[in-house]
Image (cartoon, rainbow, N blue to C red; front, side, top):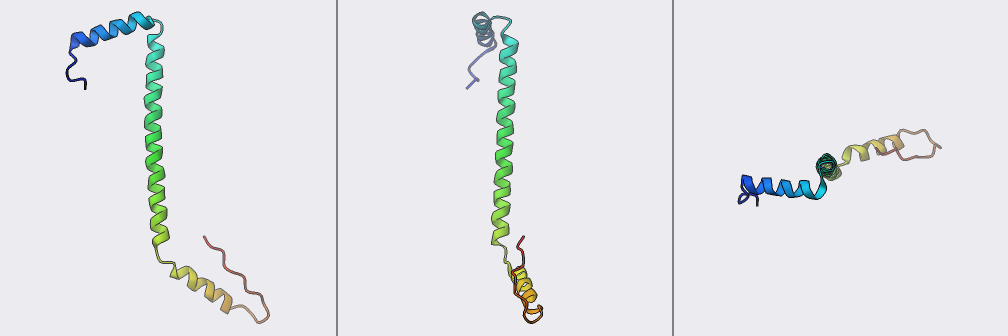
Length: 91
């Protein structure tokens, strides 16, 4: 995209930008552009983290849950006679 732009073309573009916006606005434009790039990178990083959490949750849900089922059966069998059975809390 920028391969065909030479040094003189870039200088010409910068001079036109300087004329349009003025010398006082250039630092504000640079700051705004920097904040925009920083915000974009942050959102991409957060999206990657959310995607990784979702994949971990899917993998955890796909794992067999025989241990938790066995532990709930043991708690109901070991209660004294007359006690009401309450399900074990799930994590």
